[in-house]
Length: 139
Image 1 (cartoon, rainbow, N blue to C red):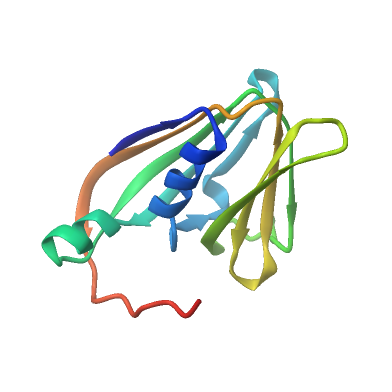
Image 2 (image 1 turned 90 degrees about the horizontal axis):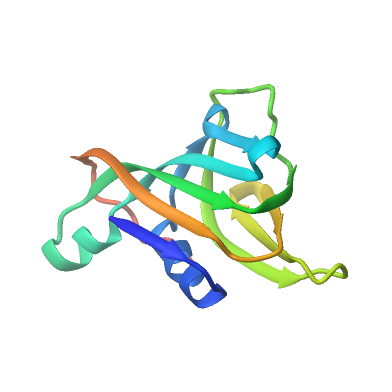
């Protein structure tokens, strides 16, 4: 799967595709010199579950360009093997008229990306693999 987002409506689609994605802390990078944020995510392939009734996961790269800053909350960055589970995206305009995109994780963890515009890409990498049946998440 390859998706691009240049507005918040398209960002909602990427958020939906990444629901319940797993990210190892060591696989998150902010590269200020090129104004980019990148994360390797193990995503549940919701599209395969809906269409073919099979449960697969695959690796995917989430990439934001034109990033001004990145902050995190409740994520132990010294524990590089720690895995955090992505729940949703939230976004809003801040007092500087920039867009803040929050990646919301279980246990009240967040990564906040500040940008002047939405420029996001998601691309699957490698071959998917089977996983045990996932339990439905409570809302």
